[in-house]
Amino acid sequence: MNALADDALLSLWERGAAVGPVDRALLLLGAALPAQNPEQCAGMPIGARDAAILKLRCATFGGRLSGRANCPHCREEHEFDLAIEELLADSPPPAETEIVLDNGLRFRLPNSRDLAAIAHHNDAEAAIRHLVQRCCVDPPPALVWSPSLLEAADMRIGAADIELRLNCIACGKAWADRLDVAGYVWEEIAERARRLLDDVHGLAAHYGWSERQILSMSEARRDAYLQRCFA
Ligand SMILES: [Zn+2]
Image (cartoon, rainbow, N blue to C red; front, side):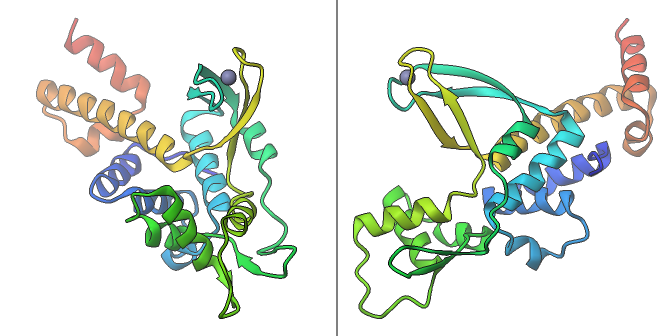
């Protein structure tokens, strides 16, 4: 996978700044898989979508991911720093496109259209119920959605999502939490865009070069000129 070039990154940031999280994730996916059309991207299961976004992130910003997470058992805050390769190996794409529960109910894996359809829920339980019901294939008319059925279905259809698995150093318990891959990578894109705009602003004001001229330079050359501007 190719790294995002600076001008492509700025263009992605510009389009993503005006839309919500689901559409931002699709913009990132489109940049990761330029041969896929928007319909294919929107229909891709979330785990596969996030794996492709992580590969774009590896190519653009490197292969290590760091951040902070709180233990759900004791609330201790942890810093994590892990290899994206390991994260992807821990969450391999599922072999099947359809999940069948023990009771015979069939579910498809959620995609970005499903996340867009449940985005208006403020209540997590209502969102999960809506998602599970949307993804159920041919539910019987009299089906009762008990809490245990919702929980079992949610666990299975979310099993392919990319998870952080950590061990708490304070209470010793292990935990796993879904990683908001697109949100994480979006923050990095926004930070990089802010730095690029600062560079363009500084060099354009000093030398009168165009944005296109400045972005076509290597980062090393831009930095060298910037150092001279402010020497
Ligand atoms: Zn803990």
